[in-house]
Image 1: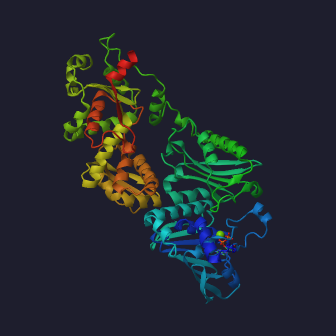
Image 2: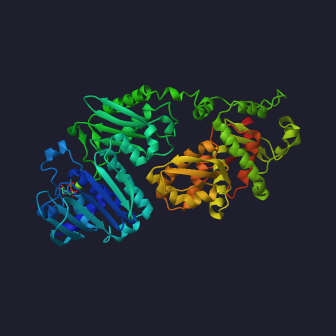
Amino acid sequence: MADIIKLLPDHVANQIAAGEVVQRPASVVKELLENAIDAGATLVKLIVKDGGKALIQVVDNGLGMSETDARLSFERHATSKISSAQDLFNLQTKGFRGEALASIAAIAHVDMQTRVEGSEIGTHIKIEGSKIITQEAVATPKGTSISVKNLFFNIPARRNFLKSNQVELRHITDEFHRVALVHPNIEFHFYNNGSEIFNLPRAKHRQRISHVFGNKMTDRLVPVEEETEVVKISGFICKPEFAKKSRGEQFFFANSRFIKSPYLHHSVIAAFEGLIKKELYPGYFLYLEVDPSSIDINIHPTKTEVKFDDENTIYAILRSTIKHSLGQFNVAPALDFEHDPNLDTPYAYKEKGVVLPKVTVDTAFNPFQETAERKTSTSTYQKASAKGWENLFEGADASVNTEDFSSVEIESDDAVQGTFYSETESDAQAGMTFQLRRKFIVSTIKSGMLVIHQNRAHERVLFEKFLGEITVKEGVSQQLLFPLELSFSKQELIILKEIKESLNNVGFAFESLEQETVKVTGVPLIVSESGIGTVLDQLIANYKEGFEGNSISQAELLAKELAKNLAVKSGEVLDSESQLALVNDLFGCKEPSLSPFQKLTYTTISEGDIDKKFS
Ligand code: ADP
Ligand code: MG
């Protein structure tokens, strides 16, 4: 048989390599920004059009390149940053693989102008799909400007795979943040479709974080500082009360490089243990410095996954340093569970057993009485949700569809009811319910017993309510007497604008979304005034993550997020009225059996099942 193995031509090899280095416009942004920084720039401009699909341009005032270097820079494995394998163990630069420009040039139209100091004339190169189209002399400022146009022009499958411009812009913004946060001494400008969305002057670390994420950050940050032989740690953590339900403001940098480290993330979480609820994530901006020879950055082409020699030690040091900061800055005592109304309820009640009504023994016992008593001592947390419940109950009258309800008929046995309800509670005729472990609502039905998951059931109810409101635009808005001022980062504002119409439809009203400080003038009935900030924050964060996962409509995603945020949680006490309203509303839903996240909302236990237990 003839020999069949061939060496791939360079442009094919480059295209294959590009697949690893360039996943989307944001990858190009990362590589170009890193090159500008490696070139010693003090001023970097990022210019993007149409989510980077039409144009990504990075202009720097760094070293620039000679005529020959400019051409060579597009060759694969062409780098000025290392010359021997030994150099890999002492990396001071971000790049070193010499692959980025070659990869980018293989799959886009690239235009580069560059000039080194001391040379009067610069050089201008055009490359399309790895082919040099022209190279000529040009008058250009010192430094380098690279434009990347029509990304993936020759790989239609990849181009089609790209998400909407907004989603791609968000990925780009994430990369921009990662670079800007670790180089506060470099001035950055970021333009999108002609307007400047970030203008970051040279600053200290703390100011840079505020410039990027908004002024609200200034009061939230607690400094972290430690120097040991293994690692030097500096940076900030966010106070525990600002922990969020979704990830987003968590940044690790190792030797000035953004890294992802689930292991070290865990150590931060461990330091916050007991201060924040399990499902919340603390914000942090942590800069680690280690001996370059003790870190392996070579694991992944995008270089965000690294390996530390002494990972366990770093874990332990990081955790104790953060704990120390939390204590030193008096953050922890303020969060004593006794005093924080937002935190005490779920914890205080979590482990307590259920008090089952002893109906047959004690005829005077009234389980609803007990809940009522507890309610008097409830925190604002519960009051807020109770308010929501009243609204829910009001709205319920019109919307309950008794026909749908018939599938799970609530038993109305007068004799039993007499035991539970006084005359005044006659609105509860539809049935009787009680709450089990502050998590389930239990009622009897003809065939046996009905157990409803309160959180999921309410998510279903709210989901259908919001979805309806978003699509028919009829959400009821509660006007705020005094507009609430909230501050958002630029990126958050972009998302807010994106979902503004849907938010208006469910009852949110904003005065203007042009400034970092946004005046909220109206909110949906179910949102309590004190909860507005949290709801919007979480909505934005979750929306950002969720919208990329799948292509469901904006309305559906938003309805889901609102439902998730506002639904009554496990651990919350519901009075009998609210319990009943929930049961009624659930069975008035189009799809009562599943939560919007496809989880069972209720189950039934038949008389037969119970009989079996006694056999
Ligand atoms: P790497 O950064 O891994 O060395 P790249 O493909 O990103 O590989 O860049 C190749 C080379 O081109 C770099 O090593 C550097 O010498 C040069 N280069 C790239 N971008 C710039 C820039 N903005 N300013 C000066 N030199 C640059
Ligand atoms: Mg590079």
